[in-house]
Length: 315
Image (cartoon, rainbow, N blue to C red; front, side, top):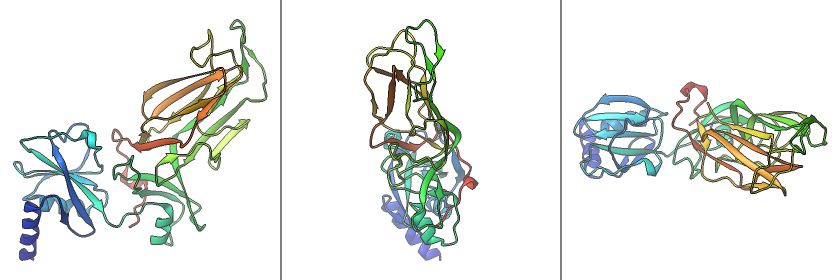
């Protein structure tokens, strides 16, 4: 065993970009100045070499990357993979950053079922190959596991609600309750996701895990018949139609730009407390807006540490 370990150590020391262990390989991405900045680690301990650090990461199914300091002989194993923009070149090389590429990874609920035919409906850790994830995992609710093709959903810890109110205030002097035939409230508890791209396709009209009163609207849609508006300038009062996008507690946040489409003479605005918590305000007389294709793209929110036991890992 000592000879094998010595060979691995030599390979890893002199070819640091590629090291094969059990079911993984590790790719050296860059040097990192301060890995403690906003990061949460699985382990922080002393080791003799980066081979030992890689071995610790390889044995932990939740480990996706690690830092190693040759000077300090320090190993930091992580539940996350960094976005390339988070890497900083350090000419002194205090920490090296390695990404774990899992050879056998479960990407979809269908693969969960293939790997474990006894698997039931519930939450699973999946590893989609979506460009927005950068190799990170995501907690997905697998629905219809008895069917040939199970479906993927994101469980919303905070219900996401769209409101098209039965209110009108055409001259901005006297708001009244008035039915327009468009009013309704739609509440989503889980939302369907294209797991290969981690995009919520908002025009697929999936209401499997939603409740509504009055007219129902797709995820992300908002509107009202409250008062006249302009697409370029908000009116003297309103709009009051809204949709609350809230991914707090899911380990996910919105990513990149999202395109919105609206009817004529409709004003749309946003109140964002974070990239995971956004309120859309939209309306006119009458006005309506919704997310246009391809949908709402998500990525991992590294500001949140999700309980490892909140989902199942199937390998």
